[in-house]
Image (cartoon, protein in one colour):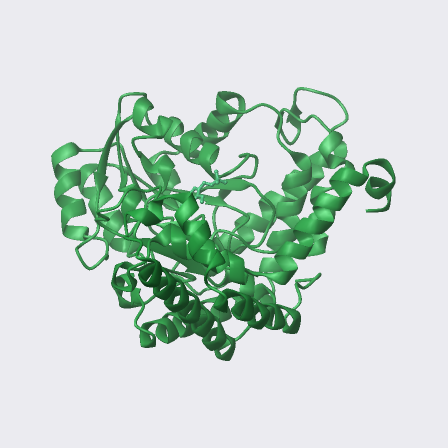
Length: 443
Ligand SMILES: Cc1ncc(COP(=O)(O)O)c(C=O)c1O
């Protein structure tokens, strides 16, 4: 950062402060990760200066010889890693990628079918607040009372509504997804099956979650979650997709550019290329299996401490915890945990009686802490710190006579934390754990 420090101390200081925050707390938001410094260097490179509207060898501006090679290398790495015949590496992020995939095969007003947001679906899967439900006719499926995808209900809903697109692959779903079952349902109603593997892309690449490639027509993914690349996204077309529609690769490319985007971010594409190379190593296969082992160990340790894990556990990198038995709201818990250095997010639980901005649960995951080298045994102190934090804050709440409803007021939460001295001691424990596992510079 020698140039930045010289030229803009203010921004430089903030970047250093953010790195320190990441270093000194546990990043357990399941959609986050720490990239290698190699990925950071590619993203921060002069490639960001280049305008490259179009595709390799078919651009609209001059000076493309080198960036063409970068995009082709990145495409080839993605195709080899996931085993697909076509990929588009230009989507700016996961949300535009989904819209671009839908618009490639459906017209405005057509029906799309995704999982309800509060049960673990993503906004762009047709949630009410998302443009996807304004552009398309969105019908949504749900999970069972136990939190598992209700495949029978998915089939009934599909038969009733004959969607053009069924979306599978989620934002807050802790279990293995039965791609084959989704494909059978999509086939019965003639729908495209779009699988959104944003969260589990790394797990799929390293063999820690079954791949949707034999079943999906189109696969969208972000590149910055378990895949451990830069902020970005890809849209893949499978052999099955090309069988259903031989024009599919073309339709996707046109939908990305010029349909929804202008110039691709070549610096990001290079960063994706670097991350894909890292993800094709034996080291990465070990890493993603460790992510899952850590998540399972953490869920088991939390369950022992009477935390209610939605679905009773996890098969992947994340878990959702229903905190209603702890008499503490998700938001209060997430804020208290931030004070001790455990960074996660408050989250709805399936059929949550509380609203999304003050829901009943939290969501947490292990990609970030596994990147810094933690193993199963290191999950116990994290579960213990979470237990101590929740117990201490709940006790203060009781002592001060605040209700579950009172917790929705920020002033109440601040008072709760100020009057819980135990948080300072727990913070020390977490800081010591962070020091034991520094953020790694290389993958
Ligand atoms: C399943 C899924 N799809 C798409 C996205 C959107 O990605 P982005 O935030 O990059 O737009 C997310 C983000 O968390 C996600 O979880």
